[in-house]
Image (cartoon, rainbow, N blue to C red):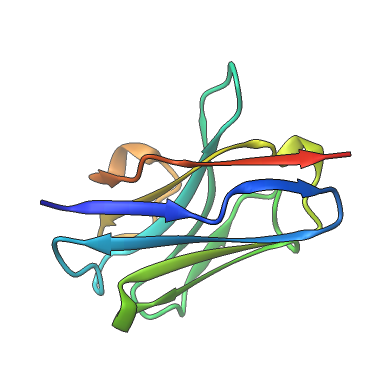
Length: 123
């Protein structure tokens, strides 16, 4: 059974920092794109960042570019999202996604999802 488990969410002050982790189990995702999406209350799920298998290709949403950094450790089957200088508008439930072989911003391309971790940014 494939599982993605996110952790690291919580309450952070605007301008602070937070690191989210996503551990995959049940199969290896070393050849898969790993991505982060987020969903704010009352809104749809939005793309945040994606990283290819080698880490050599990375996409970011314009809203987080320059503040967030996605990375991965294939030996640990883990993806990370370093959130620097978060803003109140970054408050959302953050989801890890896997399963796409190609870099995609559309959530429909991803087969596996975590349960989400809540990030709340206070002003």
